[in-house]
Amino acid sequence: MYFQEQQLKAVMVDLDGTMIDTLGDFEVALNRMLTDLDLPLLNRVLVERTVGKGSEHLIRSVLAHQLALPEVKGLANVCEARNAEHLYEAAWQRYQHHYLAINGEFATVYAGVVDGLQQMRDAGLQLACLTNKPLSFAKPLLQAKGLGHFFSHVFGGDSFERKKPDPLPLLKTCEVLGVQPGQALMVGDSSNDAQAARAAGCPVVLVRYGYNHGEPVDGVDADARVDALTQIRQALTGQA
Image 1 (cartoon, rainbow, N blue to C red):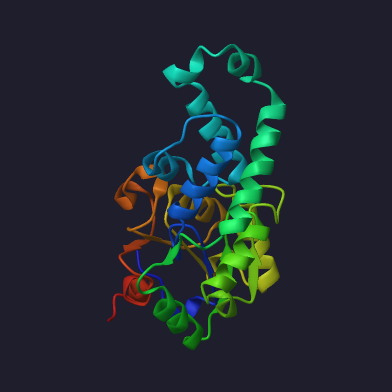
Image 2 (image 1 turned 30 degrees about the vertical axis):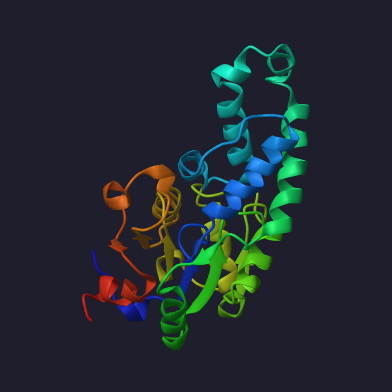
């Protein structure tokens, strides 16, 4: 389905897996957290499958996976702490400490992102970054990678009462931008972004190179799929 370009007034852009490949940052911060907790290290595949629903979900999922490993499962002290909230609290504190220390160091901007964002700006569209990443992580990362100036607003997973795939963050962002949902395009890399956009009444484009919980996005309900942000105009209008 194509949308007339002139109908769009704003674009909401996801961060992890859409603009910046942050798997390296996640892997390093999580493994340093696990080391502090005397738990086995994880691999990048687990991170790719788990990332995207906010830091709380990420940490709880990683803890559950690592605690279930055969070499850990039988340890009495771990079994005792398996469902203890204090284990999560300790993990969150260590994760936050390590992530802030390396934020952006092991991350790279995807090809086409800078040119794609500039094209949107040149077209007169308002740009907002809308991510499930905590705001205290998202803003410094955008600045460190030279992308912060593109966005009039940045909203994180802790900016609103609920996170994507709930439509609330998109609806609230539209309110701030002063546009109707149908006038605001959501650009993301996962079913979270697509589900939120559909529920909010926003058009949605997904990038094929992102994470999407380790699954291809071709089966996700979206208006278009692209290989780079520079292809969005063509995908929406059918014009080169």
